[in-house]
Image 1 (cartoon, rainbow, N blue to C red):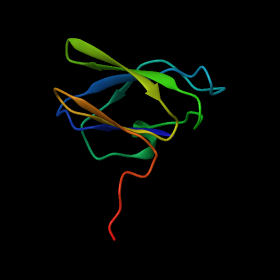
Image 2 (image 1 turned 120 degrees about the vertical axis):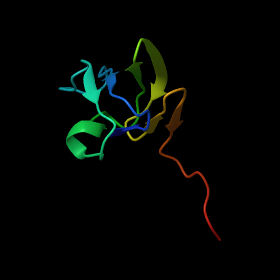
Image 3 (image 1 turned 60 degrees about the vertical axis):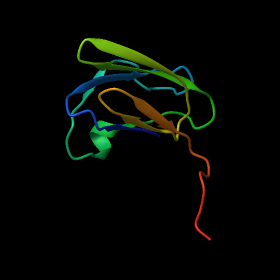
Image 4 (image 1 turned 90 degrees about the vertical axis):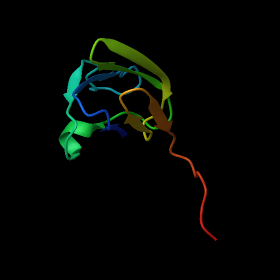
Length: 92
């Protein structure tokens, strides 16, 4: 599942391709800047193959390639972070 976290302060329109996930809708959907929930922030996509996300913010858009099914996309007003589903580090 791709999780899109809107930290921009305004509504986003998000599309994530579904070339590798049967039944996934690649259309654009609004993601408001509000309390996150499963029905708004989650996209069901296959874990292994890569997809492409397009995020529209105000009068601009960004294409994020190489999105895997378990990635986290953090969208800010002037940047984005793609956090992959791999170990990032740990406390000893």
